[in-house]
Length: 597
Ligand code: GTP
Ligand code: SPV
Ligand code: MN
Image (cartoon, rainbow, N blue to C red):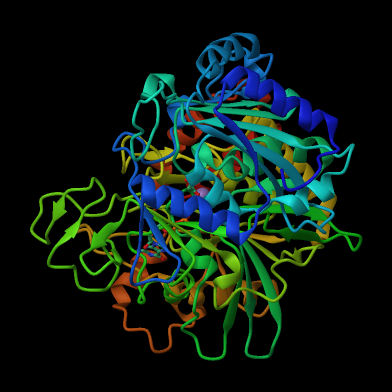
C-alpha cells in the first residue's frame, strides 16, 4: 500500500469484503499515471485491451455481447418499504436482496485482484464534494474511474480518520478456478446481474456487469441514485444534467443546466459550438449536476465528475468537434470498430468507413457487413480537462449560478422545438411529464416512447412523487431567484423520417432566445402548452431551413396535445395520493387551456 489508511471504518469494510469475495490479492489504488499505465499494460498483455497506434495513450476494449449498457431491469432501490422506492423503481426488501447478493459475492473474486479505489465526486476542495470508495475486481473499471473521478491517495488524505464515504462494492461476478484462463470481458449472466442501492445506509452493491453505469459506481449509482436521497434530506439537488456557460457578444454570461434522457444530446449540447456570430460557449459538465442554494439565494451547480463517458456513434467533427478533439489522446474506447491501421471508427464519425476493420464483437468487418461495426452504445472515456472548451471555472469549488433549466427528450412528433414554462410549477410539470423514445443506453427495446420525468426515470433513488415535491420545495425556497424553465425537442421528424431541425451547433439559436427571455427582451406567444417563440423571434440568420419546417417545429397541435392528456393522467395516477396536489392542478389547467377552442 502506497499510503496509510487511518479511517478504521474503511479498513474494516475492505477486510470484510476481502473475506467475503476471496480475491487473490488486495490492491489500494494511488491514482497515479504509473498505476494507470501499469494496469493498461497488463490488460493489453492479457488480450482484453488493444493499444491504438493512431492515438497517443488510447486503448480499445470490446465487451461481452451480453454486457453493452445499463440494465434498468436489474437495477434496484432497496428501501425497507416498497413505497419509499416508488412505482418507477424495481424493489426488493434489503434483507432479501442482501441475502441473495451475499451468496453471489461469496468467493466471486477468486483468482482476481480486488482493487480499492478511493474517489471524490466533485473537486476535492469543494464544499459540495462527497467521497466514495469503490471496491472492484475489474482493472478496466479502475482505469475508467481514474478518468471519471478524482481518485487515489489524495482522497484518502481528504477522508481522514473519521470522514464519511459511500461504500460501492462491484464485482464482474466471474471467479476463476485455479489455472482457469480468463476471458477478455468477464461478466455474469443477466439473471445474476444486480445493480443495487440501499439508500438508508448510503450503500451500493453491484454484481455481474462491467459496463458503464453498472460498474463505474461513482456515476449513476452514487452521483444520482444515492445523491438524490442525500439531496432531498439535505436540501439540495442531484440531477441528470449537463452544465454549460453561454457568453453573449456583449460578454454577459448565462449558465444553463439541461436534463435530457440517456443518449438524447447532453454531451453534444454541453460542448456546443454556437453558430450565431459572437456567441461563445464553455463546457462545465456533460451528464450530472449537483446544485445547492448559495449565500446570495441563487442556485449554484458543480459537475461531480472529472471525465466524459460519451456515446461514440454519431460523434463527428460536424456534430461535436469539441468531443472529437477531447478524445485524441488519453482516452478509453469501448465497443468501437478497430481499423487496420490501429485507430477507432464508428457509424456517424464523419470519416469514411475503413475498407476493413474488426467490429465490436471482434469479427472482420467491411462497409457491406450486415450489422453496424460499432455497438450503438459504444462509448469513449476521456478527461474533461482535455476538452478545448472546458470552462476555466469548471472546477470552481462553489460552482456556477444557474440561470436556465432545460428539460427535453427525443420525440418525432407533438413536442415543439422549444416551450417556456409559465412559472416554476408549470416548469416542474413540464419536467415531470417529459417523454422520450428509449435508446441503446439501456439494455431493452429502443425507440419506445415513455415518460422519463426530469430524465431521471432510471436514476431517482426514492419515490418519484416525493422527488416532484422536492422540486416544488426548491422553487419555493428560490423564489424570484429561481432559474427559468424551458422544454426542448431537437428530434422532430418529417413523416418521411427526416430531421426537421438541424440540431447541434444550430441549437444555439434556441439558447439565444432563452437568454433573451431571461433578459426580458424577446417576445413569446402564449399557447395552451406554454410560451413559444414565433419564427421571427428566433435568430435564424444564415440558417438554410424551409419555412414549412420552422412552422411545423413551432406549431402547437391542439388535437395531438388533447390526445396526450389520458397518458399524462395515467402517468400521474401511478403515484396515487403521493402526487403533489400542485401537479394535479397543472393537469387540470392544461386540460382547461386545451379545451378552450
Ligand atoms: P448519455 O451519455 O447516455 O447520458 O447521453 P447524452 O444525453 O450525453 O447524449 P449525446 O450527446 O451523446 O447524444 C446521443 C446521440 O444523439 C448521438 O448520436 C448524437 O449525435 C445525437 N444528437 C445529439 N444532439 C443532437 C441534435 O441536436 N440533433 C440530432 N438530430 N441528434 C443529436
Ligand atoms: C446514461 O446512460 O445516461 C449514461 C451512460 O450516461 S452510463 O454511464 O452507462 O449510465
Ligand atoms: Mn447520462
